[in-house]
Image: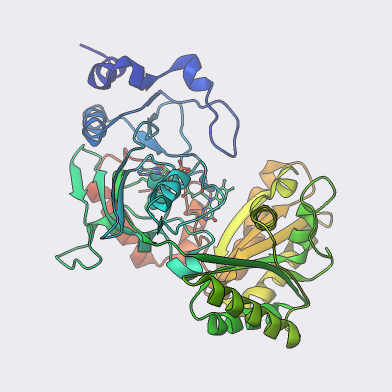
Length: 459
Ligand SMILES: Cc1cc2nc3c(=O)[nH]c(=O)nc-3n(C[C@H](O)[C@H](O)[C@H](O)COP(=O)(O)OP(=O)(O)OC[C@H]3O[C@@H](n4cnc5c(N)ncnc54)[C@H](O)[C@@H]3O)c2cc1C
């Protein structure tokens, strides 16, 4: 009788199974350079191979954790030494770009930026965009229902997926590769796999919704004195830019100050403002859009809503502005630094941040809290550095960040998911009925709890 691994090699070929030193040579994730430790890693090439692998795992009661680009922020792809890793790294094909229907059909291992670039060659835009674009995969974006910097205009991944194919725990392939905007024929089954973090199936192929690529891109960095002014600016631009506003990324002063310390990003304006916003508008008429953007900015400067503004004069300058928002290595270089992703109504954000900072201050007087966010989406990110080198402080920081969300009707996860990291906090954001239905779905689709076991909630 062949062992499980021998049968696996027979199914997909020895070169598709990575073990031993070759496995340990891989990092655990983007965030954790420790060697990857698992039973083995399998790299199927097709949905049929994924199906065969899962069928075999089902027969053997073998647990499976799916890996995309490993950029997820909540320990959702963590494995133990008994798990099999199923990596989508060889399933990267862009199978079809329909320029008339404006869809792209891609394998789930395709890297987000590769897809963005491929459709751009046809004058099209795949609007999901986030800092990890060069490493994260479309399958990972689906599994986490990723958000990012363009949600304010185009929505989260859920809004950008028309159809998908997934393989269930027993190897059954569910092909739901719908390409139309409208399709109300029964249940919309793709939703079972969007944002469920690989616990209900392995996503193998995805039909993405595309847009016509914008002709104009206007960007600015502005500085403001109060959070009230930030909210006023958002409302004003939503009105004056006529739907062209595509990014509105807010940085609290301390964040801007930290990432522009000497040796990190060059500060393009004074580092002493209370708030900064990177804003961007995209449209279809370069001249008119430029005029509209400049007029809108002049207006908010004249009104005193905005204290200072910088408009990049080249692509390099624009990239430099964006890197202040997206590259936070100056902050994560301090170990430990805990990253949070929460959502709450905009009107409570300023007082919420004050409350979290005061709780942290009481606990760790030398600690730091840096805040930024996609506030138009009700989404804040916080980096908490206790100022003491101990990773065991994480649960204490969790309490300071999550507990004040509850009276405000906030959520412990806006766009990163739950994974392992937020599992013990899930019940603060979901009702007993919701949790019971989640468990029922899991038990029905994966009765042996083989897919990404232990993530999101305990069955
Ligand atoms: C610098 C940086 C910036 C980021 N910015 C943002 C941001 O703005 N917005 C945001 O939402 N996220 C952001 N993230 C988080 C991360 O990029 C997203 O969660 C992304 O969608 C994860 O994709 P991935 O391919 O890396 O998935 P992985 O990390 O490999 O996996 C994430 C989860 O999805 C599951 N999974 C992966 N592929 C599949 C599949 N094919 N089928 C089923 N399950 C699967 C895994 O098991 C795991 O549970 C950022 C991360 C970094 C490092």
